[in-house]
Length: 348
Image (tube, rainbow, N blue to C red):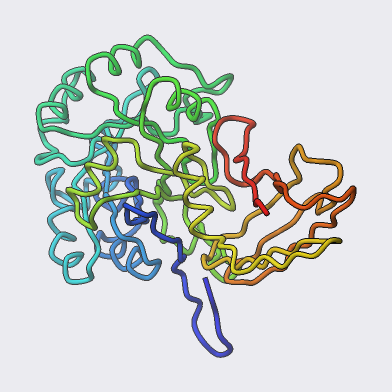
């Protein structure tokens, strides 16, 4: 995320690809005036384009449409308005709707659907069956939302029903400004896909201060190809991470590779008294490091920050005749499970 003197803020965030997958920046939960949002559908495309997002889904509420006296249309209309506009901009648009119910089961997004109208039913189970019959990818929205779960973030019997009947494939681990560690653990335990979304209703700049380097909460999708089909395949195989504020949240295998692709060792300079690692962060991500368990003869940082697009020389003093070893640390803003960050090491 770079800005030059006299230039407009660049809202895009540079995040590296993995060895076998492209890293796609996606937001699968947002609203327009066709439900309870405050913008026209094409505005969501322009925002995504300006931020360098690869894919978005407009997920209008089926059951809550406060502007319906002024905007009279069926549930597919917002997608139809933005479809060609998004194609011209190069933004992938995925069709979706939000099944909006009280707890339980709460709110869920069904994306990759073909027709939103059959999901507008009286009984919630019928809405999920209709989504499933269209081959939808369904995820639970903001599970710890105070308006629906004010005391604790709880998994209900209704969620077990949806999960066991193939009507829940993922959960929002982060939504807007909120992170739900319980949802992260459920994803790990139940093999569900982790998602992060903006759930934006207002114009994006109302919530996000780009001048300060902020970004929307989003899902990083590690896809074989930059297509809707590629995104679908990655979601089904749980190849995602959540980009939430300054944190990356996800399964260890993806975070480990992502850090290794972002922070590369350019040179190791060693003598009998010290070893120096010259590393370069080629991404727009900031990484916060903390010393891990280590050989007491290796003396190095307690904490260290690797800034975006920058080169660093990390010095390790050698005592006791040490000639080789491992510099162990945690990347504290890469979260692999509740309360646990990514362990990493530089070897020499």
